[in-house]
Length: 283
Image (cartoon, rainbow, N blue to C red; front, side):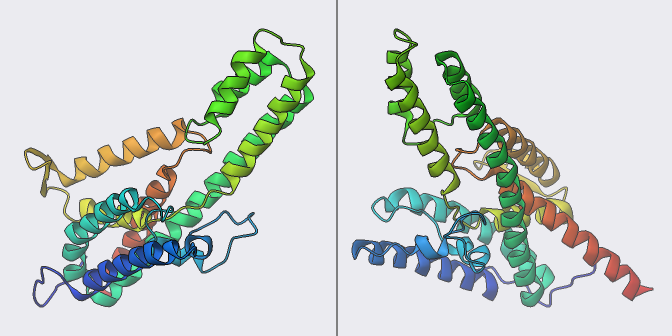
């Protein structure tokens, strides 16, 4: 690829403004949250089957970090890690691509990652719905245990009621009250899982990470400042980890691993298209 910056900037304008906007969104979430206004209800990304889904959320969710205004510390660490990666990899890429092309790349990676993730969720929800239908058709203690082991994610806040019921039901497997409670618990679980929004710039950031490894494969990255690894191996390792956790965890997992993979995939496609177009222009 033939992108030649005229000069190198440690904090180029697009990266700087993206960091500022993300910071402002984070402050707005905290300040408005104290007034009882949860902006994540409108700006976080909900699954397209949800009544809360809006088309602009495909973009706005990239500037939201932390979905709980009452717990800003967790959101701050999410924000910090994404902004650090944006600066670390994005500054080099913006200097290489130029401001306009870099912003296009970043936004497309973020949108593509979210669409990829929502598509994966559709399959996940379909599988979960079938598992619930199977249990409702045969609501036994054994089927309840099977559902928990195969479909339940401990990230749900229904964990205690689920396992308290399991412990009680074991000693009275024919109790109709336990059967009805199990159906209600599973129904509530489905409602919680399918209404969880996603927030954060991670999909776009993973696109930047892939682009850096793709364009500068032999550049040495210092892991925790003392473990050196080439960029291409670092990206491959990260992708393998995300692939593992993306398929290991269920619909209730609170980390969008498949969105990270989606960001990498979109980055690969964009870079291939740009590279092909550059060769055509050269010839």
